[in-house]
Length: 466
Image (cartoon, rainbow, N blue to C red; front, side, top):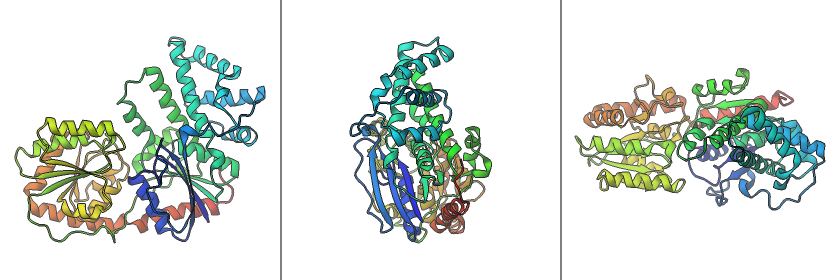
């Protein structure tokens, strides 16, 4: 069995939950041969993980640099019109016809100069006149050109995807689109995992930037196209939580194709620390310093906790993924007078050491799937205070291992942290139950066996879904 994992902006060139998930999955399924096809962010092509023995090959390509090394092919008018019609679906947010795209890619190499063709001009004009004549045409035209350019970058990747028995995309975004076309080209089944929710994360990112409304609308529709295409062509869709299913169904997923496989961690590695040093308690936020992880809320909560308690606070996670947001977080710490109380530790190799230093785990995210950091903290016997987003309530609701608070609500967060600081017996009781829950439901063995079942299901099913 040969599995090609398609990653987008994650394994093996970035650290974080999704990358750790992929690495641990391949380690656990060491009897399977894997390939990695990584769509990398600009200037992030260096692998950050040691190559596993069962990893056959790794292809890492920057999506923005796919065009330069390819030879141009002139497209016949009919083919150019077909391709233009496919890309017009992107402007509507529809799924694209991967059969048509695959046939074109078998015969032709598409350079960006094609965007200047008469067929693209005509289809763009027609869409504009029928759907948004009230908008500024120049703004719309250049937005459409930018969207088409992004799609062509994705198409240029497809012929480098390795041949495998099963394609497994770790996202339903660009990775899912590439996987869908690879599936059609090679006649092999496709599995799309959803550890994060692509649309929600894109919406949060867009809200941070001053992007014209026309561009925002088309970027959202591009995201819808990639999701609808992924769901249409996937033989199985594998979310980590039931909370993902309603938006998947809304964008065209079929209920019968959905299999929930929750995340899991190595409970043999993440073990409780049975002795604390008696120092003032430490409260830890374990997450990459990026907007979706909500460190602003955590920092504000720290300020309120310190009004009544002596404690120290640490933020542990990569700080280079969004330097602007990291600088904003540091500025907020300074503005609130917390420089001596809140420390940014950055990325660490030995997470266990830091879980053992912490008394309370906090996750202030605006959106999550089933976060590995939460599972690791629970496995180490830590009580948890987390925002009630995504799949987090699946873990914490009515389990007695921690508290759920609304997102972007430092008052509620500080109140729950204070409650745990006030009661050591409560902290220890929650931590003990947290460890028990991990052993019952959230080990790497549970997760890997669930993913293995999806591989076997699509292989034994015979022909891939069309």
